[in-house]
Length: 278
Image 1 (cartoon, helix red, strand yellow):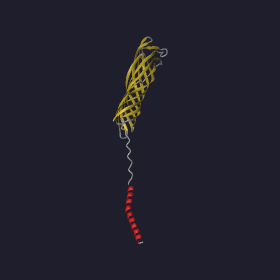
Image 2 (image 1 turned 180 degrees about the horizontal axis):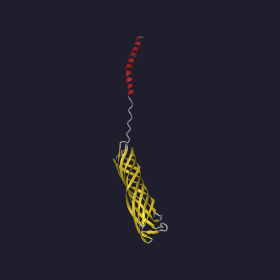
Image 3 (image 1 turned 45 degrees about the horizontal axis):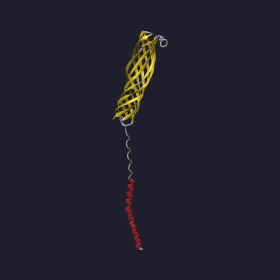
Image 4 (image 1 turned 30 degrees about the vertical axis):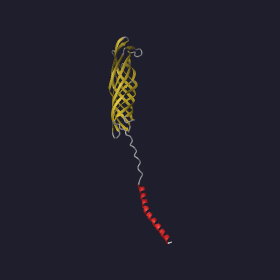
């Protein structure tokens, strides 16, 4: 009996000692598990950032529409008269551009651009000259063709990463050719008029007094290549030309001298592609 009680006491003491040893270890392990946090997720890679700074060259193609108003005076023989009229023209354009951009840290972009385009823009108009008393003295058909034009412009835009929204404006020039054909002359023109035979003349004119303004959107689809859609308005005011035609009026030799003053507005819509040298 005494031996059994002693045995139980020894086993109890061993159990207490075992718990005394194991408990701190378990508590330490639990503390370790509470302190250790799971590793943070990997950082997402930074998104690609496009910088618009650099020189570029490219090409463009599009369409153009012109509206021109003309006033002038005509001297047929000794009779002076005045006239006015308007005409419309349309055609295809295409050419190239060169420029440079600089992007600020605030995403604003400034730059400059120069371009030259060829044009098939052409149209015709008919007008008659009338004296101060209301007498028609002559009628003419005028055919005009815009051969080429160019601009030198500043650009200001805002970049949303690889998309650039911009406005643009500056100086414009154009080169055009005009053919005038006097179809009739005399008091009854154009109904019971005398036919003016040989009354054709032509002129080539380079207008350097123009201005232009517009806007566009440009998209960089690779590190170096961009696509754009652009609208421009070109305006040429006070453009003067003189035509002199020698012919016969009802079999009698005669001369017609015409001076014109025109205002011309050209609207252009085009797409372009550029290569940027970063």
